[in-house]
Amino acid sequence: MPSDFFGAVWYLVTNYWQLFLYGVITTLIISLLGTLIGFVIGLGLSILKITKSRANNTLTSKIFKKIGNIFSSSYIQFFRGTPMMVQASLIYYGFLKLGGHWTAFSAGIFVVGINTAAYIAEIIRSGINAIDPGQMEAARSLGMTHYQAMRKVILPQAVKNVIPAIGNEFIVNVKDTSVLSVIAVTDLFYNSKSITMIHYVYFEVYFITSIIYLIITLLSSRLLALLDKKLAGKNRYSIPTSQTVPEVFIKGGNGHG
Amino acid sequence: MDEIIRVEHISKSFDNLNVLKDISFSVSKGEVISIIGSSGSGKSTLIRCINLLETIDQGKIYFKNECITDKNVNINNVRSKIGMVFQNFNLFLNKNVIDNCILPQAVVLKRSKQVAKEIALSYLRKVGMEEFAYYQVRSLSGGQKQRVAIARALCMNPEVMLFDEPTSALDPQMVKEVLKVIKELADEKMTMLIVTHEMNFAKNVSDRIIFLSGGQIAEMGTPTQIFNNPQNEITKAFLFQE
Image (cartoon, rainbow over all chains, first blue to last red; front, side):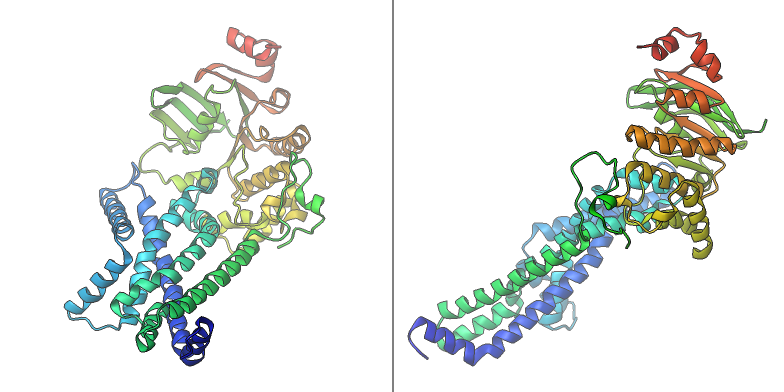
């Protein structure tokens, strides 16, 4: 092992690139699946949280709605109010104690998923609240039920608006999966730590690790920015005047699609 | 004449503010009624109560002799027969023009996509928006949006149309194109309740005018009675304020 810094870095990269690579793959899979699971659960939680009882509801439906409200609020409070490192340990060892069998890898995906759900639930809830109430009124005035209006009009708009924020959650997860090393998930951080144990060099290894994390998060941000642009639609800008002339005529597009 | 809507002694308040006080009137089939009055007089609240977007505190509203303010009534069924046009258009921003018209037909009336599309196109043609059928909503001008909103409501084949200040968010040129569409509906004997600040339009198109003041009907009558010979001092003050 060379004694100068760059020599050592090069030595580590060429000799242990496979371990780094496996770490990266594990980190990416857990972050990606965790965010997806988090989105699905979070969507459900956000709906449970905003559902309100109405005067004409039956008693049973009022009770169910109240239980839903309480459940989702407590869920969100718990997962946002405790560190993910503690959640991972609690859930991983808890399941084992109950006699369950699972690998640290699947436990990792599960923990990241249910943890992210709490954050995404709040993101979607604020997305729903940000939709103009006129959208719901128009849907209801046409005879749609509250559920139909939510599904066909409100949620598609809310989800589209919060996709960039959910992408951010993915980036957060790329970094936060490092705490899963506490239950021995072989992610990028855990593998880096293993490499330090071989040669007892620390700074050089973590230097490489930081660079890799930075590359992943930078690339992800770039991709997100592109996605964000695509979602906003092409040539979308408004002319800062009153809207006497339709925008399509001003910008000369055909406006289709 | 066939009575289609009857409002009986309705009252409505938001917290301590009494917005509507003991309002009663009825609407016959084919009748066009304009509701006028200064801002805050309860015009919009009144029309929103008829579509059950606001719940009333007291009184009853009948639609074709069915009490729609009853607890057990199927609200969605009633609303699908009463079209509503809003001041801010409220077109669905996640849908293009024609899908705005197709969605409620498919979801509420269970019409097939093909049938709904043909009906949508025919009403878009009626309001002069057929060529914009596949445009995104946000690329339209205010007047165009409002005409699409009218077409969307008409697609449900409503028996009554409610207009809540349909031209208040538009500039004069666009006001004209929207009022032209409403005038055509009046000529076809569509039953309509129109909340408006366009006095000349109200005068020309209505069979009856309701003048609201402080949440009460200050005066009700034909346009000639109200505009040429108002009896109430408040009506006079409102109409001849210049």
